[in-house]
Image (cartoon, rainbow, N blue to C red; front, top):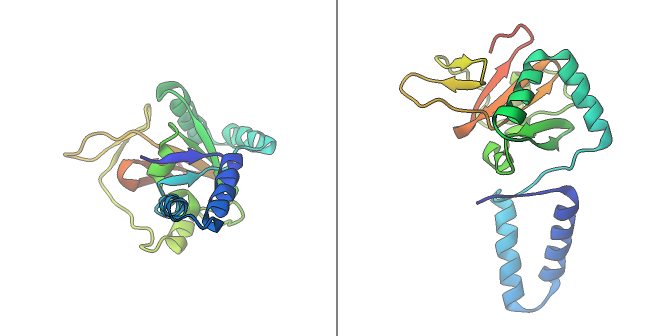
Length: 183
């Protein structure tokens, strides 16, 4: 089970861990090391709290990108809620508190200051690079994707950057909608 922590909680957590590591008690050190391992293994995830300017940026993206506005609306209204985080300056929206952990490192591959298309950013930062996978169908009304023989998958979260939209699905399937609405 993964846990999502906001900025303030994460700062307090790391401060407490630092204090515990300094303690000479073996049991305290053992517990601290377990917690540190959870962080390193990705079971404890740090998610930035949104700042005031994020809301303005999100409104600007929604106003200029109909696909992202549709995805955000779907995550809010159809999936039951939205959790927001920010990674490398890119605001991300997730279906629930567990979704950031399920998305893993994918949000870290994109940087707001990098002007390259999403595919190029992911290709450069992901150890395996970007590999196109043909055969998926997108159900635009509900953002589900399907592949022959597999069950439909609903989005875990998504973001918009430089006119493109990225959507992350279970099992780390990633869809990028280009400016020309192809995916």
